[in-house]
Structure formats: structure tokens, C-alpha cells
Length: 542
Image (cartoon, rainbow, N blue to C red; front, side, top):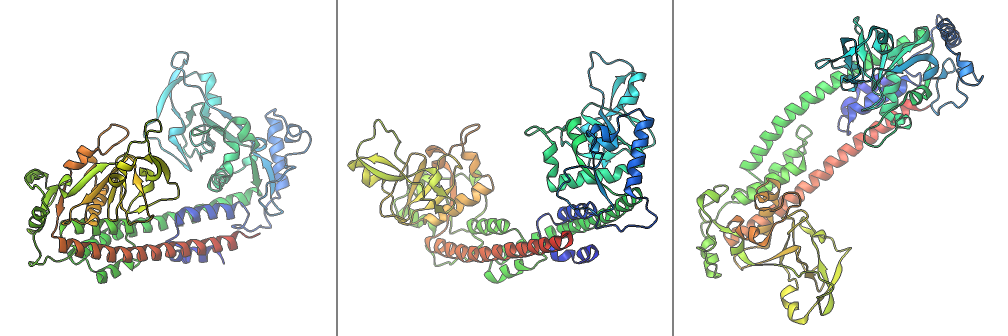
């Protein structure tokens, strides 16, 4: 397959993660393997270029490459793994350029006229950002060492070490000590070397020449040691032109992707609005269309939002109102009353607002104290065992529980467990996963009354954790907690019991469909990525 065909079939790869970035990396790899250029009979051989490099060094009174490499010439003795055409050769960066870092910024010692200078914050891959150029005093006799002229390659010593761009302006510019300046011998194309450094960055090979964790740096010695594949001079120019052409095409594809994403966002909003008006399994089918590709997380959030607003299933006038059912269960509605200001949204008239403590029995688990606890060893759950709507039971610990505590602390089918710390509010419903289980103080257990389903409470906790409502009830500046008192005061809307059952059933039904949609989208992305990898392998094969 030709690279042009690859671009023509971009739509097949567009779903692959970072598709355009991978295309840019591919272009650079192909270019530096000589696969984007052909030899011309008129090209001078690279050996002539190497002789011209040595002539320049002699003229400037510099040490020759042969002496600098102990007589092994400028060609490497340990060529990198990359295979390049026979008409090319390998050289080290330090053998084809004069390079040095710039002037150190020292307000106390620096003297001279104020002059513009650039640092790593102005230097990006292939371009300069000159909106905030600073000045520092520089003496006339310092200018030659710390001033770049048109065609010089400037390289970050710190920051993103190795990041490089060619100075394109007719006006000279000074540079700070965290920037290397490279001026190449014999007319070697600085844009070609810059693209090679870009290639090393794209493939991760540049890490071999960086030092430091977090903030990296590239010393002059490390820069000088980098092996560079060197084509004939005329071919360097053709490669740069071809890479520029293909990168411009990538720019256009990236722009098209951004435009599609903008349109996609509009379509997604419209699709979610349509689903909100009629949240049925049939209306979920439209989300499988490639034009939407709605994130499943957004769809799940919409379903939960509709569920707790009373918009997911229709109301039945024959349903016993929630307040009546709660009163029959003995709930003191006045004690757990919610003010109008605390109601987060309007709900159907058959629903009622109540504080969380009013829905049933609420308590924290047993304090873990190896010195004081007595009784038999029993398995217990911590907040790390409670994930969203499931339990992780691979690492269940044991603690001592006295016989008098067993009935109170033993979990029963349908108990809702809520994390007090860790990720406060995270919850799951106990379904008798094992015959006997207890719970630690890091967990709240809610055993709702007969008028409330644990599933309905969990739906509210899930959506209010996502939308930030529950965070208003957390305590602690850095490590957040949901205390028993705060949880008790948290207001939630309660539908009639029959409607709760309908809501839970509909949520379960729709979430299964969303899971299927997520699998389809993941399969689509996986297919696109594998197809792209196969094509890249074909194009880069030696």
C-alpha cells in the first residue's frame, strides 16, 4: 500500500485512538527510512557532503570528525537499528554541527544592552511562540555565542528536552542557557535534522538522550552523541518538502476531525434530548449510529438523571403515594421533612422528598481494634471491597466479633453499603454473595423500610456523586468523608413503591443496552486500531 492510499482511506482509521498523531509519527518514520524519497542521478553522493563538512571544520579551525572519533571517521561504527538506504550514512550530531547553549540569566551580574531572548517557553516543535519575549542585558562580545540567525536549529536543553525548531526570521534573536543552538556544516538542511528529532520524540527513542525524572534535560554531550541518518544534500531538501506536504495534509485531516467533533457534539445533545423525551430501548438504537458515537458514560448519566426525576417511566394514578406508604411504615415525616429550597428538582405529585435517615435503619460498622475486640474471627467488608454496584471479595479480612454483636453487624440480603471514606458515597447492594459477612466502621449500612427499595437509594447516590450534589455533604479539606450525620441529612426524592420497581427494571434494561453499545464502540475502535497497525507495519516493513 502506498502512503497516498493510506490517506485516502483515513475514514477507516479515524476511530483509532490518536489516529492523526499516529499518522504524523508514521510519516516521520517513513521519511527517515528513505521511503518518501527516490535517488536522483544528479545528486552528489553523501561522501561529497562529508568531505565538505571536513572542509568547513578545517576552515573554522575545528577538530575533524576522524580525530574526534579516534580515527573511525564520522560514520558510526555502531549503526542504529533503523535501516536506511545505501546512499545514506550515519553520523553523530556533534560531527555535523557547531552547537552550544546560550547565556545564563543573572540579573545581578549580567551587563550590556537589553536584548530580546528566547527560552524553552518560546520554543515548540517546528515553531516559535513570540508573544511574550523577554529581555536581558548582553554585551557585544557575548552576542556571537548566544545569538541565532536565520537557519539555525534551536533545541530545548530543559523542559521537553530535545524539542526543536529552525529560526525562520531574518532578524537575529538571542537565547538563554536552557536552549542549544546548532549551526550545521556544509549546508546540511536544519529542517531535516529537526524532523529527525521529531521522529525520535514520536517513537520515544529520544528518552535515551534525556536525563532527569519529571523535568528532563539534554546536555550538550548527549545532543552531540545522537546518531543522525544523513542523505545526500539534495535528497534532504526533497524529504523536507514531502514531509511538509504530508504534515499539511494531516493538519487538514485534524481540522476535519475537529469540525466533525463539533457537529458530533450538537448531534449528541439532540440525541440525548430526544432520549430524555422518550427513554425507550428503541430510542437507544440511534446511539449506535457512527454519527453519534455518544460516550456510554454520558448515556448512563442521562438514564440515572431521568430515573430520579420521574421521567423514565410513566406514573400510574392507582399507585399508593410515597408519603402514605412511608407513614404506614412508621416514618416520622415531620422529623425528616425537607424544605422547598432543598428540593433539587420538581418531581411528580405522587413522590415525596425525605431525608436519608428517614428511609430506614442506618448505622456504621464495627471499629477495628485488635487489642480490644473479642469474639470469633469473622469476615468483614472495608470500603475497598465496595465498588459501584458490586463487591470485590478477593481480599476480605477478618476481625473478632462478639456473639452479642453478630445479629446487629451481620449483613442481610438487600442491605445497602455506602463508603464513608475513600470515594464517599460509593455503594453496592448485598445479595448474599457469601453465607456470612460483617462490615467495618468505614461503611454505612442502610436497611430501608418496606416502602423503599435499596436500588432506588443507590440510583440517587450514583447520580448525585456524578453531578457533585453529594459532595456538599462531605467533610474534610483533603481527605473527604461522609459522616453518619451528613448522610442522614441528605435529601432524596422517593416515588411510590410500585413505580420504584418499574424504574429499577427500566434502568436495568437500558443499562444492559448501554453495555452492549459500549462493547460495539470498543470493538469499532479496536478494529480501526488493528487495521491501522497492519497498514503501518506494511508501510514500514524493510
